[in-house]
Length: 621
Image (tube, rainbow, N blue to C red; front, top):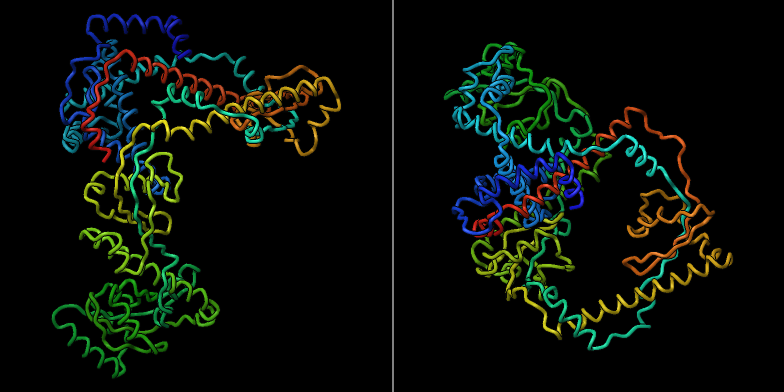
């Protein structure tokens, strides 16, 4: 909130503060009682309301965006997603309400001018009343409603811009920030782990009792279920050896993927209608009598290809759907120039002529092992989908996990006291946890639908639900003891680190002991994955100008003694003038965003935000 206080002390901040507090004094904004919210409303801030349907649409859009970006749908934490969308819509409602309170509005004339510039309403560069009316009709809007939407959007932008505009950061400060990022120094790190000092400390029952009394609210046991689950791994499914026909079925796809013409080149005569079969027999007789295939195709074929003598290019069985196999059989054994018997498909009756054969036999012979593997994988994928569908049907019919496993030859695994939080089991994916604690599944004591994790489908049957509760003293005792041991051992580690620092400052030999090659991290800037955050934060705070500085820092794992060489500063920035301008814009945008976040936090503290908890719970199921 420091940035917020600085902002409110500036002259623009004072204007905003005055404009905020005066309307609040008259309108009662800031009171936290008496507001009612309707069942179809989820968020209410002053006059601004977010209904359930808007929330659902925003939630779906956020989820779809994650999936389209490549995130596995099964790994999306729905509860976290709901909270993100809830916060975003609440913040928007707070700002919209504040813009209204401050009297930030936009005239009809300005909105009209802006709408006239929208490309969707223009025809040949001019505003079109017809397109405007069509847009309103297609979106179920009236002119007044559209103006209201645009007025709200523009006033909100006006408020946000006024806050972001206060993010003034001098060029000299930007240059200083850039130069700081270019500093570097050689670093040696010697770490003192708290575990190495654990046997030197003891914790009394009185200390444990005192800690328990002070922290009992945070010492809780997670909600749990006893979890039975079935796991179906596609890669582990056993399938029969593929037949030659199944191997051949992979040939066309293999050749296509490798840019090789697969099937023969064909011409066809297609006959449709009620008399198609009889006409096909007559044309076949004409062909047997020596008449030209191309001439007959032009004369009798009901397909547009007849105009080109029936040429349809490379044979692709997928074009003919389920009839592709029958057509393959009709073409089997034919040579160039030979004609098939009439064969029926969903299009009608075909007579085919082989115009060219692509001899891929040598290529396919060399790819035999790959084709076999592809055929096996295809059969395994089919078996996986069929068995998954079968299990889902059994689960829907009310069968338990044990019965499903018995009928499918799978096994049921068990996890007792499966936790809802702090879950470090093998099944700690958010989608699994959400399904295991789904209210309907728990109450129904049924088996969940399949959850896809990688190449595995998992079905869950939770039982013996135990809600979250406060830990008793006896339950909390080992947890508290471990925490207190770590705290005390970390203090000893830090004391040892400080002693090492004092010794190194007094003795070159001790300093040399801390700067061995095994402790050397190399040259480091303010970004270094080899250092933890607390070590990194201290890296350039200790500068004496000496060849080497030595200091101790407390860390989460204990303590560290760090030796830093002389800080190297860059005399010239590698950034061009254009790049420097981009950096300036980014820094100012970030500072503005921070101030906006602080301002929204300020509005949360001073405005009444009503959340329909019943409607929100319905979204979380």
